[in-house]
Length: 118
Image (cartoon, rainbow, N blue to C red):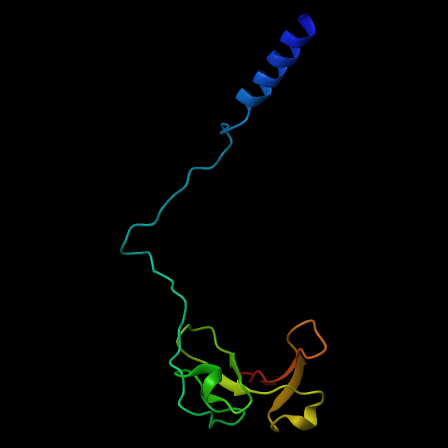
């Protein structure tokens, strides 16, 4: 009987000990005028794919690209979307683009624009 009481006391002590501690940080929420609501970017579907590698696909996304690949290559959420295509070598990409591994799979190489130095 003593053993059961001791086990229950130990288990209760562990359970009570779990939870918020003094070291836990406070959650701070920015005021509404500072917060920006992030939502998923949804593009309109193109009637037909007509765009080549390097063409802007900001409005219709991959559905506008003949290759079915639209890359986001600039930091702004609403800018910098361009059509791309799978590649295995630099020769398959436009002159100012390169073939780069962008996904860890055998089909993960895409043509991407080179970074222009300022």
